[in-house]
Amino acid sequence: RTVYINGQYLPEAQATVSVFDRGFLMADAIYEVCAVLEGKLIDCQGHFTRLRRSMAELSMNLELSDDALLEMHRTLIEKNALDEGLVYLQLTRGVVDRDFAYPPEDTPPTLVAFTQDKAIVESALAKRGARVATQPDLRWHRRDIKTTQLLYPSMAKMAAKAAGADDAWLVEEGYVTEGSSSNAFILTQDNVLVTRELSTDLLHGITRAAVISLAEDEGLAIELRAFTPDEAKSAREAFMTSATSMVTSVISVDGHLIGSGAPGPVADKLRAHYLEHSRAHAM
Ligand code: PLP
Image 1 (cartoon, rainbow, N blue to C red):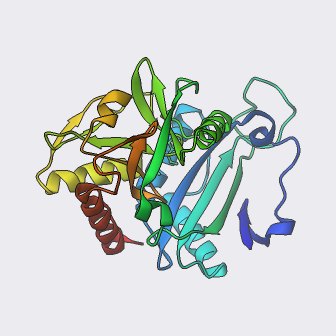
Image 2 (cartoon, rainbow, N blue to C red):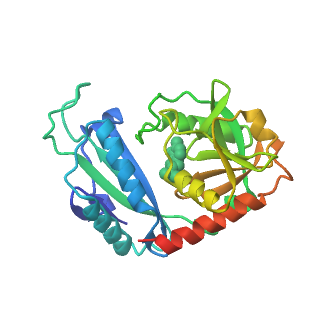
């Protein structure tokens, strides 16, 4: 693979980062993931805007413009002949002696990016539907910042797998916050689409926003509010959203089947619409 690192495109074996990088030592790093379909980027402007927001929250700097980021993404896709998958980008506060205080603002950041193949359209999990298990949400309280502090979501996913599920839905004070790497939705028995309102409790998913807007176009009733695991268990349908899973049905919560235990028609329709919307606006 060809990897981008600080302005250079290098074979992955040569693309190395210092032991003293704050991303490595302190998870002082943020990231973004853009899906790629037919060699084109999906919703990348939304991901770049969220990257800028994460940077601002953490006082991080980057000299590249959004146009330069887009050019870099396109170059990586081309150099790696990527048809379907993702571009991962990570920005760290750079290489400096270990200290809890941020280094001076002129410390050069580390920017790396790479591509990864992934079947997005023909996803086996989306076809079957995902089983989720609830886990306590023990992450920090700034989940709106997309940092690389991913150990707890990893632990929660492993615990969910150990419980026989595919992924975790995280629960705090009795309410679902989001999935380990996705936003969570339910469709109530009264056909109301429910997903948690934005706050610092969850990541402001780019796919979440696009799917809400498509659901509005469909004329679906939408409530932005938290829901409990019990409400999910008795829902008509449930699904999760993320850049690379798009819309993926959830067919059970803690072993309770949702509806018939197969992907629901509304989730299927929103997945199809999001795919169509993505292809129409790919860059
Ligand atoms: N929530 C969390 C915790 C995530 O890690 C992700 C994506 O990886 C999402 C939600 C979905 O965000 P997006 O739709 O922008 O990919």
